[in-house]
Structures are given as structure tokens and as C-alpha cells.
Length: 188
Image (cartoon, rainbow, N blue to C red):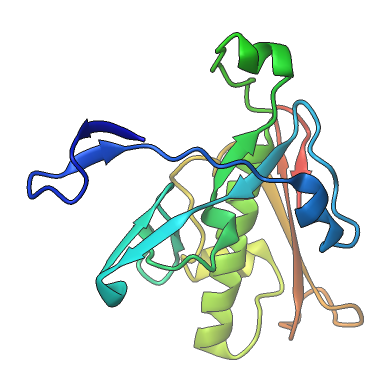
């Protein structure tokens, strides 16, 4: 639907698209997938590529922690689902009434951001030293974690290497868990 202007006009136009997703079709292809429920949220993003890839539009910018540069950066990469936006499921009555207020953050957003910061830091560590770091302290020693933004002071983060490795040894695989101190919500 065109909201303002004309499509393909030199001065541009504003337009909107409404999409209906049939969950019975999409979930049938995902074994173990959980049906949407009121209060739940899914990560989702949409991309529009024009001019043979020269122009790439996304619904939500793909912003992730870049440990090598010690900052968050925008990426042109739809294969970063951790950076996708959140669609929160509301009751029909709220949607029909036009209510757009989102429920308060349960702590999952902060814990997710902290866990993903560890993910990117671990991959930078492996790129630099050939193995994943055995601890959060090892990542901090190389200044690979986000210590100043968002969830840094709000979440407790733990890292462990693959089963069988001593806690102080670097490893070929890792597990990370971030827990929001305010709510107790954990993401791994």
C-alpha cells in the first residue's frame, strides 16, 4: 500500500506491506518448533535486495558486537539471526483494539545480548589463538568482550569448554550462559 508519493518516482515514495504467515505451514517443516503463544516472541527479519545486490534494505538493522574493533557494527548479512528483530505475540483483543505497547523486558533481551557478545568474542579468540577461550576472564584479558554497553553490568556470564577439557584449557568447542541479574532469566 502506498502511504505517500508514487512508486518508482524520482522523489521516492513511502509504502507498507502486510504479511500473513501460516504457522501450521512453517512449523510443519521445523521439528520441535514451538507454536506462537501470547507473550512469546520470535526473532524475524525481512530483506529487500535491489540493483543486483547494490542496495539492501532490512526491516531491522543487523547490528552485532565486533570484538576485533571493540564496538557494535552494522552488517549487511541476513545470516545473523541473533541480530534480527523481535516479533512479540499479543492477544487478539489487544491487536484488534490497536494497542501497540510491548510488555516490559523480561531480562531475556539483556541476557541474549550478553550471550551473543560472548559468542562473537569466542570466535575472535579462536581466530587469534586457534582455540576458544576457557573462561570469561581470558576473553576480558584480550579485551574481546563488550564491557561498557547495554547488558555488560546487568548480566553474569559463564563460559566452559567442551566436556573433558580442564577448566583452564582452551578448547575446540564452548558453551556460554548469560543470566540477567535483575530477573534471573538465562540464555545460552
